[in-house]
Length: 166
Image 1: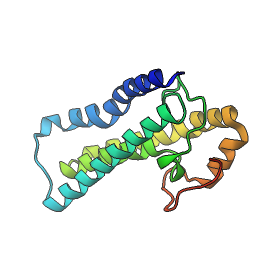
Image 2: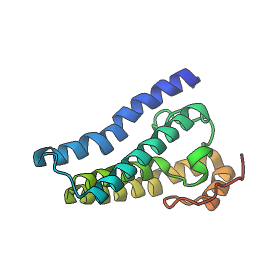
Image 3: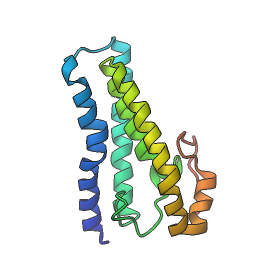
Image 4: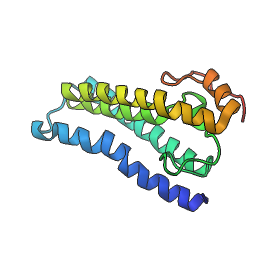
């Protein structure tokens, strides 16, 4: 896939997947509750989570187009294993970022159902990674992925970036 098409494909997938999971659904879950907000400290923490999550999410999507010449969508995968940037700290930065965005919104709006939604989405993501993504990546990239997987945690980021294979 050429880079312009990878960028376009990633942008479309960004709107379709994280846009719905971390944007539209949380908005729909809170729509009937107005815009009441939590106390100031929780709002600040929530805004920080949303901002950090959005930044990591945009960065991760860009890495797919620029480094991997593909998209995060399973139907248009990358030509190369994406292991740069945020991927040197955690294998699943997009999923972690989406959960941060959802939990940030839960804090901002003091909305418990968003915490439950984050738990359900987190479990679905973990199952998808374990039973689909990891086997596909191991098959596609072989030893390179296994080395990456053994050095970079899936969900809780490393403090220092992994410097191997790159």
